[in-house]
Image 1 (cartoon, helix red, strand yellow):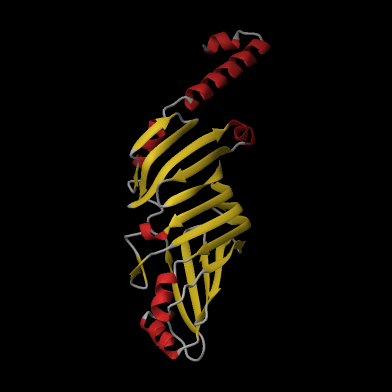
Image 2 (tube, one colour):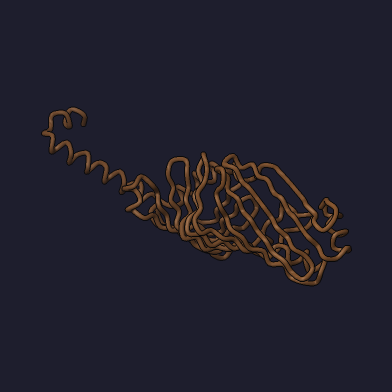
Length: 258
């Protein structure tokens, strides 16, 4: 084959290269989705995939579970034009699981971008961890025009989060719901989430930062209006005197890498 290419006219060699490239791309695109599933599961023991349909170009995975969280059934389609820009662009959606919604993913070397994301996650599906000694409850919703994460930093555009995760605890303390909402921004190379909420009994502000190496810092500030609520929060580890109590934590996210 090498001799044939070397002895062929320049135009013919170009046709050979184009033809070979087209054949290779076609072969890769036609690979079964099950092949990708097998490679992904081998890469991360935390991942489980029940069944696969379609090809690498367009397909679906059902019964996806990650770190014991039933993610759902995921469908995807690779957009060919993204390859011209050196990226793998995928339209993906998830249903019938903890994660429901859709987004366009743009994958490049060392980075991933989520575009036009509209999704919600059932926090109650998290069973292996607790929050202040109680199981996670409620849902978290995200609506983002762009959310880009890379090895060196991040970028966000019109990204906002809403959650009712505190409703159960708030009802126990005050009898009222406690919705939280805020923006996701990128500051100093870290992803930063600022949530705020209030009801007739208290005001709460939450600041969370996540660095590219998955280390995080969380700070909660609460301003209760009744002494018994302040006393209850101190039982959960809040500290401080006067009108404002605080709780802080730092660490590294677990379960995201095998």
